[in-house]
Image (cartoon, rainbow, N blue to C red):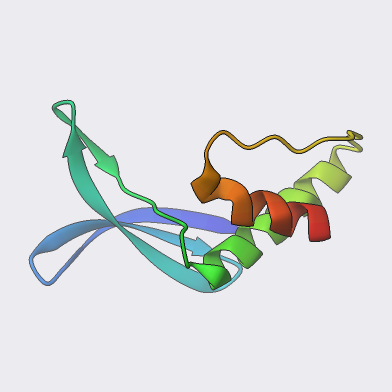
Length: 86
């Protein structure tokens, strides 16, 4: 299960994401004049493992088959690897 909500902590605004009872607070940044929740998965082992498990579960539920996992940037290598392992 994934749940999201906007929260305030220490006078800062965050996008709180709850996945499988684990909570991740993504800070908001202004990019190109728009406010976005910022996520850098580098070094976020728990986040990568939780996300990959949920994605693999979804892939299995949809009965998808494929030979290759392609990720757009090197920062997502850990997620692609975790998906492949799962």
